[in-house]
Length: 112
Length: 113
Image (cartoon, rainbow over all chains, first blue to last red; front, side, top):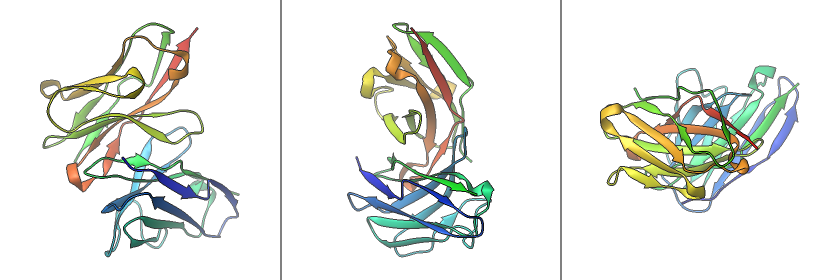
């Protein structure tokens, strides 16, 4: 298994600003994943972050809006840039060994 | 492309009754299958997973699921539901060691006293 922590747990941000979310895993993992969960909805994958290479973004998500860093095998950040109210969501980080996925507690973002 | 369908948006059961949540998937190879539970305001907790082998898998909190390849299904069951089981349940299919998962839309479980 894997234990995943995220910071911050929640934030309220103004339109046009950026927020960086941190994700820490208690063990080394090859891939880390960032998901978005909009209110009352399921999870949508934003991107896959591999250490040492550019993140791979899913359709509808772009690097300029959601830049990702993966400096080592236990840590990743997701930045939500130039925020608008439509970015209000829960952002979840996940990772795990051998195809398993464990999730962090999420970051609840509200954009005003 | 992989996809997951959870046909039931909302299910209500009485406490002590049995439960079955349905999940159908579409995937070109042998899938990695997961069930997660999300309580209000909480993150996702992995209930159980299927990668290979025995098609009946046991999970935490008394849950089990059965993989049926012929029906492309991975239904979640519990023989006796407790009030604390009320939550949102997500089925997901993963791309093996590529890791990323596709989630169903979720089923909301309400437990009547």
